[in-house]
Structure formats: structure tokens, C-alpha cells
Amino acid sequence: MPDTFQPRIVGFCCKYCAYAAADLAGSMRLSYPASIKIIQVPCTGRVDVIHVLRALEEGVDGVMIAGCLEGECHFLEGNLKARKRITQVKALLKRIGMDPDRVEMFNLSSAMGPRFAEISQEMARRIQDLGPSPIPGEKPKGRAA
Amino acid sequence: MIIAKQKPIEEIISEITPYKRILILGCNECVTVCEAGGKKEVEVLASALRLHYMTKGQGKTFGEATLERQCDREYLEEIRGDMDDYDAVVSLACGVGVQFAAETYTATPLLPGVDTVCLGANEARGVWAERCQACGSCVLARTGGICPVARCAKRVMNGPCGGSANGKCELGPDTDCAWQLIIDRLNSLNRLGDYDVVAPVKDWSSDRAGGPRTVTREDVSI
Image 1 (spheres, rainbow over the protein chains, first blue to last red):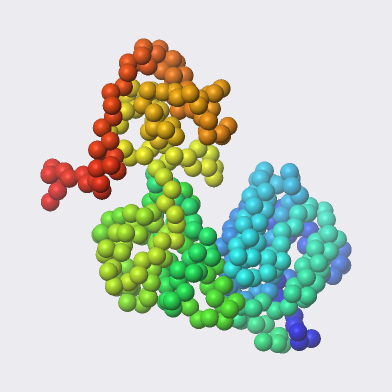
Image 2 (cartoon, each protein chain N blue to C red; image 1 turned 120 degrees about the vertical axis):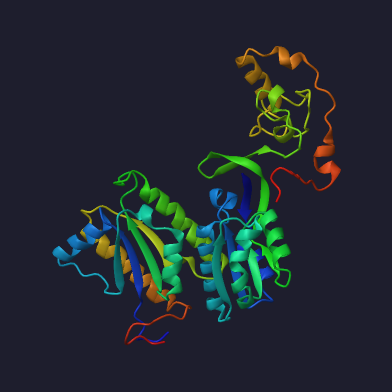
């Protein structure tokens, strides 16, 4: 794998927890990998199978979905629905020959800024180990093809 | 509605192997409601297939379309202009839709993307269960609205049989005894007397035993 590989990860973050936790991580001057591109969603229950597949089709190397702690969803069970869908995506990826580890769901609260930095680093490390996505997509500048 | 479930993606991949340009064709009716072949399922299947072939470095292209109904020629005509762009169609409609599309587009292979299961109802989110077998001569009036044809494994018309125990069928604890349900229902309707009337031998010629069935109505034909 070329040393120049910079993972490109899409993070679907719930407005009520992970997005706020990312904000808190910033306020706390905690660093997390710049490779995570955050998309704010009103609830992880808004994230559907097709959103994850489309991101992978566009050539991103990994997708993380970060929602509220189980039992703490602002919309009661959006995060539980999201988890089921992510389980479905992972099973589908396995069957079509892609590594299911490229997609992961995390749960955290808005007060867990350090945890956000931690899961971002964990995801970035995992994708670094897995290497670039086998899907040809638009690559960021400076990235080896 | 007609209940269907998606075929394993491996089977679909195997079916489309010889073709390069494939249309994934959904249906807005029953298969949308049972979440097997509507617009959403078309998007997910097409995306998954694209990912599969991109991973393998093979250049197949997948188009997506969802028709109002595939069991109606006027809706099937909507894609006539696009058919030249495809080598094959994977239809996510029920068996009726797949066959009707195949009859309409005779030069293009039509492949089924779902397995058609039964005529059923949505019992709970994510649970669909059989309620009708389209036997062609409905007996629900005298069975309290519970069908002994669809819900009794033996299609017993004067039940229950000896396999009924504690309200369950001998098939297993997950299957209610249809005749227990019928008796309970007649009882609650104060019509238990109906149960004493022995049902006549059912005429199965209106079922599949009489071959493929057709309904013709002069009053609505043009």
C-alpha cells in the first residue's frame, strides 16, 4: 500500500449526540483525523442502506455512523433502527465481496467529545489497515490512485 | 397483496452473468408494500450490484426504473423506448409482473429478482403471513372469516383434524390451528350452530386443479 494513502471516510453523525460531540472535541482542542468528513443527520434513523451504499459507490474508503447511546435516542429508537440497517449493509457487503469492516456504527452522547476523537481515530486506523477502497472514485488531491 | 421476498444476491449475480447492460425494474404495487421490489429495493440492488462488479473490475451497467404496475400493459409500455439500451431485465415484481413484462418484451431476457411467496397480509412490521390461496370459491362466509384453505395445512373443510392440540397445528407451535380459530370466532359471534352444518364437498375445479384461470367480464371490456 502506498504511504501516501489518505483514507476518505464519511461520518453520518446524529445532530443530538455525535455531531455535538465532534463540536465538543473541537472546543476541547482534541484532534481527530481530518479524513473523516462529517454529514449531520437529524437522527441516525434517517440513514438508510442506500446512503451507505451510495457513499461506497462514490469511492469513499469507509463509512461511520455515529448515533446516540442505546436507549437515549431523541426520537426513541432511530439509533436502534440504524443499527439494524448497518447490520444489513455489512451482511450485503460480505455477500458482494467487499469488506464489511469498511462500515461501522458507533454510539455516544453529546458530552463524549473525547470518545468522538477516539472512534474517529479507530475508524481511520481501521481503514488505513484495510487500504484504499476497491471502487474507483473521485480521489482527493495528493492521494495515490 | 402478493407477498414476495428478494432472491439471494448471489443467485441474481449468477443469472445476469452473460449480460452487460441490465435494467433493474421495480413495481409500485404489492412488492413495494412488502418491501421486496419497490423503488427503494431497486436502488439498493442496483447499487449493490454496481459495487460488486466495480470491485471485480468488470464493466457492467445497471439502469433503474420502477413502474406503477408490471401486471398492466399500459405501464409496461413506459419503458419501451429504453429497452434497446439493455441486454436483460431483472424484474423485482411478482411472478405475474415478470411474465407480463416477458410477454411484452419478447426480445429481451426477463429475469426474476424476487421469489413470489403467497397472498398475505402485513401482520407486524417486517412480518407477512399467508391469508388466501385464491381457490376461486370463497367459503369465508361460513367459517367466521377465517380461511380453512389457506390456513389449514390439510385444507380440511370440516375440521379440526386429530393433529390439533392446545389451539396449535401439528406442524408446530408457531402455526395456529385454523379450525380452532374458526370455532373460537363462531363462538364469539354466537354462531356456533354454523359449525354443526357439515360442509359439502368443495368444488376444486375453480382452484388450480382446473388449470390456469381467467376472469372475463363483458361489461367492462372494450
